[in-house]
Image 1: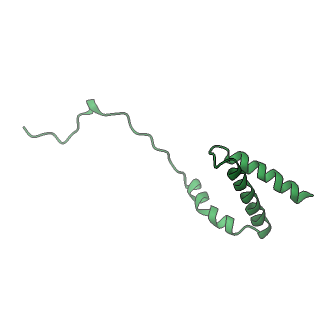
Image 2: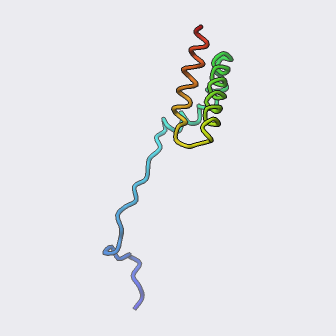
Image 3: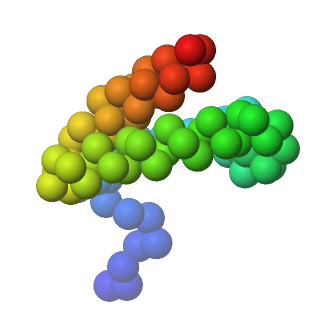
Length: 85
């Protein structure tokens, strides 16, 4: 007897949930590189300085994972404090 083209539903698993990426998220992701490139030079320089300082903190900690936000926040505070003097 030939097999039926319909599947046996008694052995199906639960549907797989997939994250939906909204059009807004796609637009923001696509615009980010352009936004960074169009920053005024003062802001770009400030960001570069913060990035270098945060990287140095990461190096001082022995390249450990999990403290990137703390390193960035610390660098941000220090660079902004220097700028406001």
